[in-house]
Length: 223
Ligand SMILES: Nc1ncnc2c1ncn2[C@@H]1O[C@H](COP(=O)(O)OP(=O)(O)OP(=O)(O)O)[C@@H](O)[C@H]1O
Ligand SMILES: Nc1ccn([C@@H]2O[C@H](COP(=O)(O)O)[C@@H](O)[C@H]2O)c(=O)n1
Ligand SMILES: [Mg+2]
Image (cartoon, rainbow, N blue to C red):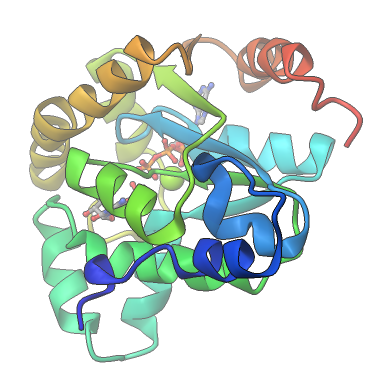
């Protein structure tokens, strides 16, 4: 059956083995003994999510899961969904949540990490709801890299990593999709008090100082 129709199965397993029932929020990951800290990392195309995630990993030992990288790896594997994913990425559209959440779930399940950065996810309300349903967890915080469109376009066009979506036509489409589908997710987490907006203009180090302040407030600075 569809992944989306499966319950947050690990939570059910935990419930049946202990009377000490953890909060539903982190249910799917409690089987590892301790619920990991989860940060979603959002922002438009080229806002600097991946760059800042690298700095967070270096400094604080998070495990970085980039949804885009997982999808690109899936394309490279020539698997069942490769062509479908490639076509969607070329169009700047969003891959069905069932596929993306399954890739994230696999990485989280095979990791012992207690700190995850989930970069470029959730890109839509559908993504968000699928994650909650399948993983059985919500993020502790959401970092939002807020960057003007002209700056994002400039950065993407200069990126030079051979990505099929780093061209002006696809960037325009990605910006439209970001506004239509990702901003509602950002607003959702803002209302929940989980959103931390970072001014993504400036040097990489200047931006990282803002990130550091957010992580310090959550006592995640010890690595
Ligand atoms: N503060 C900055 N100033 C100038 N250039 C930057 C800055 N941060 C990142 N860049 C550059 O901008 C480009 C895009 O950055 P990055 O790949 O981190 O963005 P992203 O948000 O992950 O984008 P995407 O959503 O497309 O994956 C890269 O070439 C990166 O080196
Ligand atoms: N949750 C997601 C994340 C990404 N995609 C697709 O991949 C493209 C590249 O993503 P980056 O985070 O590396 O910019 C993106 O434009 C989408 O086509 C997705 O579908 N769902
Ligand atoms: Mg990226």
